[in-house]
Length: 361
Image 1: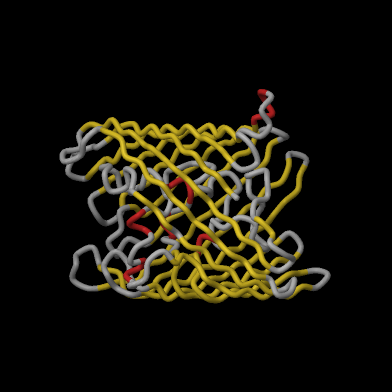
Image 2: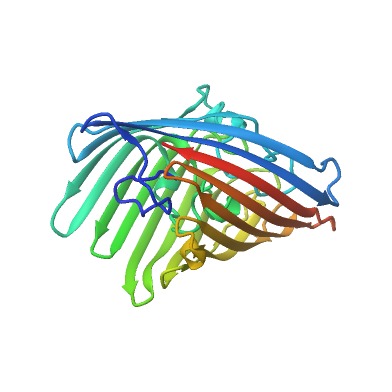
């Protein structure tokens, strides 16, 4: 998720980061380190233990005018943490780890995450932003104030975005953002180099959102539609299918210290997919409730119904506490319980405890 982008929802990180070299040029970076330890049962081939990862993501923005921006971001990582070393179908940490920043989407290049140009049109009543280049669909679709940031909020991938809308990252595409009154419309089209079946495909996404201001506080209510071209392997392996899904993503303030969020949605399962439905929800508490207004406490759960492959149902429960040590550095403690019930009767399950440190400049 990009932070501070035009027309994007406000980040929960209280400070605005980035170093302004001059009125046109700015640089920034995220430096993150995480360690996760798992204790699991009924998971043959997987061991209890700990794995870590370190991530550096520098970015550069050039704004020749107040309506134009050139932006690029790179990703470097050491280690994959428990991703790939845990028996669960959803990643324990949805950050871009070592295997994510190499041969991105089957391309030969490494480390280049985004490189785009954006132009904004404004009037008294509306704003339109047009972006094209190497983009990330999660910058435009399935925003959520309380569950959308793997560096400062929940770590588990199912808490960051709805997997049933299979949002691609870091490939050629274009995006349009249109904001008028309390409504917004985001549209994304991408040519993606490779899916899990090793095939190139086209992705199309649309988000319609309504923001509200009530006596409880601010809220955002979104519907996301996603479609992929007929380049996904059928669950039988005999031919290919397209994919499509719908997701509802909500966040709502309830007074000064409580916020709540929810996601639910479905996708087609003619293609080979682990899950065809997601139901998730959670809360965030502002540390002002206990005299630490810069801290956050988050609790969330998710149920995923099985799709056309081996999973019958998955559960994820996660809680985190984030200490904001200063305007740059935060430290989080995270605890997850995961359970995949498989159609063959096996049920890998267990606990994952993590620590995460993030410095954002």
